[in-house]
Image 1 (cartoon, helix red, strand yellow):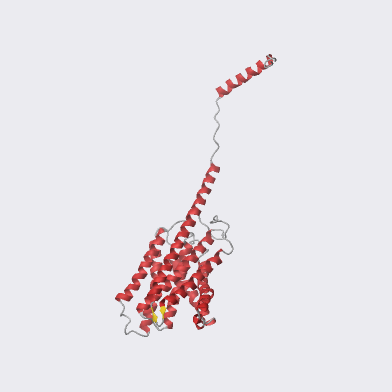
Image 2: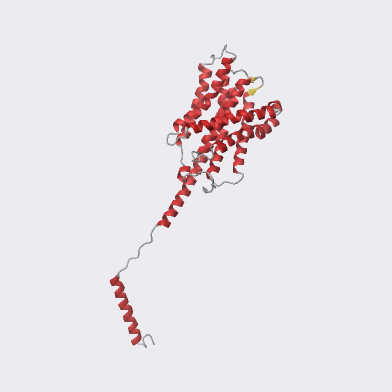
Length: 341
């Protein structure tokens, strides 16, 4: 059961109807962005599959880095363009994206690669990959999304609708995914453009999906009175999905000495579809309940504010009633035997 919206917060709270505003443009943009990502992969694998032949060094790295920006540009561009009724400020959305990229590049990646040397032991066994992928990689990466949204935009007056948690969390997740793709391109001295296009889309889809789930929890905590462990539970769920997905992605794309990135893309599309559908349903359900609470509160206020119904007086009838009452009283006094058997 959803809890009642609370105003006991140090942060700005708009009216309840505004909090529960349903943005259909956002979900339409998500579907169009998915189609755009598939078109991006198709172009590089069907039409431009030979562009990278003969290239090397700086040009191949440059194209790989440029390619890494495309998924984020598609997502953020469609979200901004389609959300026309009340768009998020462009500078806020891009700022959260850049902050996610900065924190991932300056903190998360160095911590995982240098401090704990994740690549030296993570793939030693199924158990280390599962546990390390969830408890370490998953939590660190999803903590980036949480910290960026929580301390970068959470208290801002522009964060004024429940779905804003999803929008800004996806922006932060895409910033992190972009830096992860940059890191991959630089470490490998460039990538094959066909396989590389699939990889950057898989990474972007995965992290946008997990960030969307976490963003729902953040949006709820922003406008609802939630239990103490509510946000940690959302972070744990996103980390779990993160670790399990990349474990499965590693298994379905690698078979012996061959690599089939298309299986990873299919898995990422399924995960993105399920996660975004779940977020869409949860946000809609929470908004409906919020609007029901608002309607009940409004009816209660209206009933309290209604003036009392005036009592109409009829002097003639009141005078006649007084005469009748007086006559009956006199009759009783002059006939004391009345009523005796």
